[in-house]
Figure 1 (cartoon, rainbow, N blue to C red):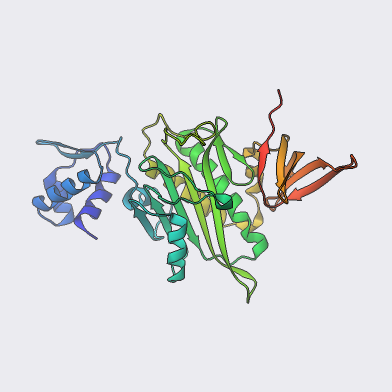
Figure 2 (figure 1 turned 120 degrees about the horizontal axis):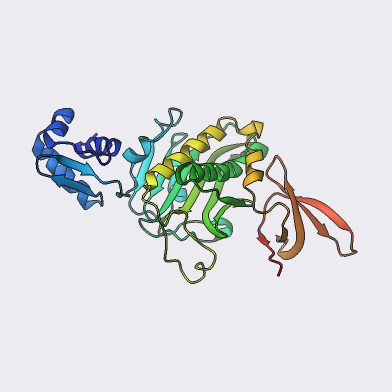
Amino acid sequence: MSVKTDLLSILEANREQDLSGEELAGELGVSRTSIWKAIKTLKSEGYQIEAVNNRGYRLLEMTDVLSEEGIRLELDDRCRNFPIKVYKTIDSTNVEAKRIALENGVHGTILLAEEQTKGKGRLGRSFYSPANTGIYMSILLKPELAGSDAILITTAASVAVCRGIQKVLGICPQIKWVNDVYWENRKICGILTEAVSDFEVGKIDTVVVGIGINYKTEDFPQDLEKRAGSVAKDTSVPRNRLAAAVINEFWEIYSHLTDRSFMKEYREYSNVIGREISFLEQDVWREGRALDIDDDGGLVVECLEEEGRKQVRVLHTGEITLRVRE
């Protein structure tokens, strides 16, 4: 590890505390000049570090830079040793995770970026990913799961995001089936799960879970400004804390994914059940009522057939919109 990395770990663990250059140099076994140079580099990378004569250095609570050190500090034992890679700018964390997978990437590898230039959304859409305001994260999995169980990973990630937000920020978001998270009727998170199957054995070989959270984003493109929002515009809580909380919750759920116990929470977080909806089926929009979500994550819908009969069906993929009645 470099002096900068080791120093950042100490500063993150002691936010808002004064640490003298002499104390830091002694702990790391380096010169005070080395500490000064590392502090200077960290400041250039956006860390807000206060230096006061006769008191030392202090990492201010308002500092909000995504970092391996800041995230790892908050992780539970079950995921603390997973590889973490943080990028200043990248095309897409999901794309990079798939590149890493092709190079025998390690199960549990976590990728984050301050900015994505080609963030990916569902159905070939892009995900708006401006610099320094969001959490853009992918988790690389090598699951021992059949395809019928692997589909639960997306719903698990949705619940993990809601749990994390609730624990860190004290608010309760909602899930719009199947993988969008909402707060105050605006989308604040999208989840994109991509899988590569091993057809010879009939199992999923690699799964990449992409999670994009609008944390403090304020300026959205015109096509998004009426439906997108941010979850933490008015908080000083650093993004590292929420990123770590989501990671912790995801691995807690993943550890017992196949018992489907988390699906009860998924239903409780749902903003769809009991609502009138429109759903896209074979390129045709149809209308119905969302009755429930089954234990496989399928949306149970009641709709009218052409002859006027009511029919109940289960949607496993697709797109829905909530219908607003005057």
